[in-house]
Image (cartoon, rainbow, N blue to C red):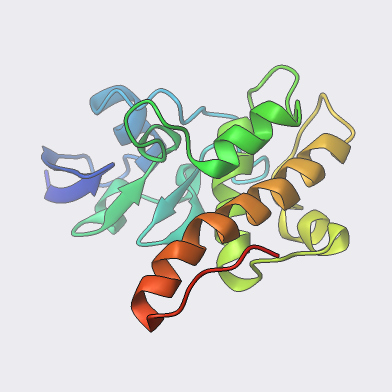
Length: 172
C-alpha cells in the first residue's frame, strides 16, 4: 500500500492508502473532513469540490495517491477561527442555499472562479459554476452570493495591496 503525505487545511498527514482510494473518501472517512459531501461519485455534480494546490477539483475524480505532496483546502479550512471566509459569509447572507448539500462545492468553485476574474459578471458566474449542480435553487441567490463574495474579497485584500505598494487603500 502506498504511503502518501498530504496537507489538508494546514495539517500534514501521512496515510497508507489503497491505490484506488478516492480523495473524497480519504478526506471524509480517514481525516474526518465531512464538510466535503459525496454527491454523485462520477464528477458530475461538484458537491465534493475542494482546492488542490490552489485549484478547484472534484475530489471524487481524484485518487488520493494523486494528491501525494499536495495541499488540499476543504470548506472547513476556509474559515479563520470563528471568522468565516467572505464567500461563506456571502452565501449565508444572500440565502444562497436551501438544503445546503451543494454549498461547499459551490463555494470552493466560486473562490477558484475569482482567481481568474475577481469581478465576474452574472453570466461569468453562471458559466464558471456550470459544473456544480444545485437541485433546490434557481441559482439566482447563488450568483448574487458569488458576486457579493467577490466584492468583499476584493475589499478585504485592498489593505494588503496598499501595504505592499505603500499606497493608501481606497474603497470604490
